[in-house]
Image 1 (cartoon, rainbow, N blue to C red):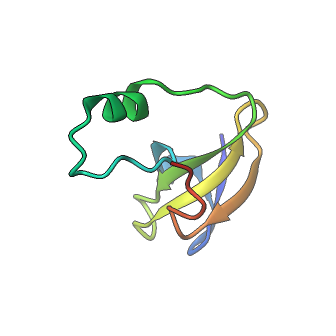
Image 2 (cartoon, rainbow, N blue to C red):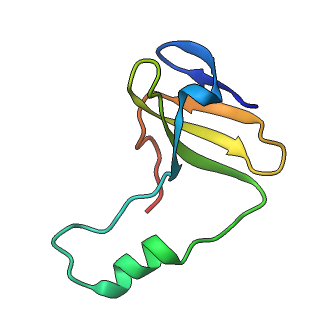
Length: 89
């Protein structure tokens, strides 16, 4: 069980949150290049390292937050109230 540090509510149990996936920027909606969408949605790397993830605090402040979490140890090293903070794209 993870204890997630919500920037607004403090440390909470992971059962209060919904996982939103990797923090990624998607292509511009006006971009009609199907290949760009395919790469973002289906072709993902799976690093054994720290990744940025989006989590929705559904049973709390109802805000999206961004976590930096180690995929191997599940250690959370950072939490941000801005879900797009430093998102790679």
